[in-house]
Image (cartoon, rainbow, N blue to C red; front, side, top):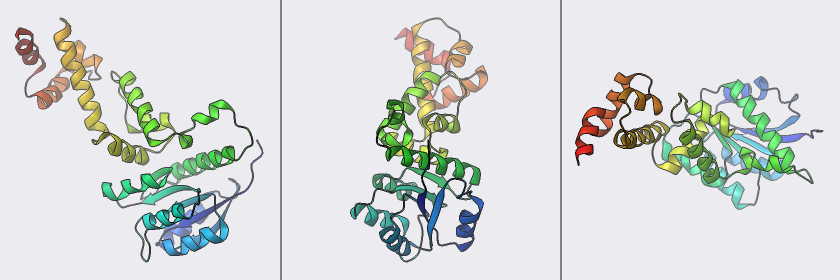
Length: 255
């Protein structure tokens, strides 16, 4: 597929980061032109009006106008450019606000530039495909075209199917085609608990059902829900229920 040149806007109040973003990523090889290096949201907003970028990489915390206010005004004015947030600000409620403005991904500082390049390449591909006159049906399933709700439904299915295996945030984020940071943000916003809390709860509830459903050993049940060491399974189960798996089976089977 022939690729046409895209326009990108980079926004950060720290000049060294702006310099790195403009020099470290292979923009020319990705056929992307940086139209502006902005130091705050107000500068970026003016650049959006002047240059109509396809992609914005922006920090959240900035003087004069922060990233969320900038995004709110961009959407109010009808601009549909894709947005990737770069931020070291970890307060969840603040970062979560970006989801309602259609932010496509989220990466934490210090920036992993290899991961950033992969995300920019993916978003650039999504932008180009969205502008094609016709689109193959399989492309409609790309991460950028699925809502946060659809992504989290896919995450829920993945977790249910992989419950007995050892997997982590990066595995499921890669499966969904998004970054680990953005996955964590969306996951907690949707399920109101962290990924680890959710997976542990699913494993413990499944283990409780299995303990009462038959005579399988505690070790076998632990392995079925992802814990290969009986001792560790017992420790997690006891913390979750207040009793060991054997005690839980004995007490609830009799009732």
